[in-house]
Length: 464
Image (cartoon, rainbow, N blue to C red; front, top):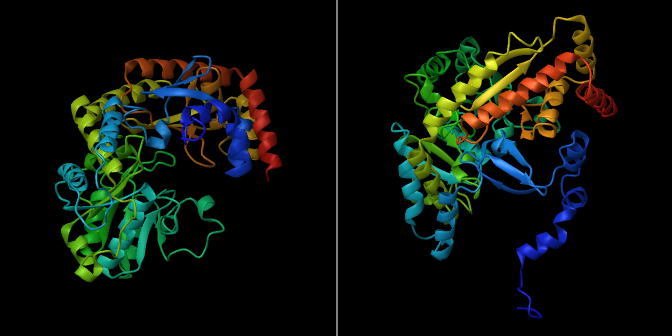
């Protein structure tokens, strides 16, 4: 105690200084973030959150169709996950001694492996990019080969190893030299076969559905790629950081294709329950035993905070809730309903090109309209910067309808929907009604929406 006050009073701190949030970020953190939020009008002040909703200081609710980039699979502050974290803190466990084997990591590994019975062991890290880094290292060491193949437009993380297999040039620029990895087009088995013939490929890392653009490989690609890789003694690495744990209507997205059994599998995001960062790399027994080949190599790959009790408890609670509340089945059922209702609008709006995805991972793509009036406006946006129309849709969804969404990558005319897996028909109705209203306004050719578009064009030109 100090002058009768607690040493640290979180409620008091937030009460006194919470209003400085945007100024603090501008001064001390990534200064472009508040600038971007101000430009788009996304500089909201959210007071609390629960399930699939936020509330502002005036009590207005906002529907979350973004789920923290997929982290909030169960929504925010699920009582079971929250209770598990209270329990593990109250237990005062002897955690992270580094020289014992606590039960929680083994129990969480057992639960995860039960959903991937062809895999045998798990390494726990702290994030999705760390799960990918682990897979890249393990694949290289287990095969004795230096090169990883990845797909154009892939996103596997932003640390140096995962950046080397990142298919988006904008993320890679200025960070060379990276690792000697090679991109192929998603679904291009001829390119895969050609690269494998060189004899130096350790594996192919692939998202069963790409987060950037919500693009899936052609049917049968994953199975054919697996067969080619194994024929050349290389590994299939499935990055399920975003697609895993029920997002696509199966526990893992690769399970949509019969016979696919990755050698290494990366998960994270939703496993955290939205509270404690955690990443997991699942793999075959022989891979782990080759990496950890002797007691001298026991710490050859490790993480200081990996397998910590809070993360493990959160993960176990998440899996228990998913089983009890049947969230995978809900994601399939609700996702099918949402996708079908949105797809029915494609013929109604000329700016709407396609609705695609699986489960509650849905991409809405916009394209060049046919009418002259709209075509001229579309051309204005495209000349300034590709992706501005999608941003024009995201903005009124938030401002007018209080629905949070995102553009699915730089220079893409695609909106991605990855809501909490707990949403139902009520949320589907709300989103479809709002999206229809925004499309009606966009096709009217005037109004505030196109005024905002002109503001985006000016901003894009100024940033060149």
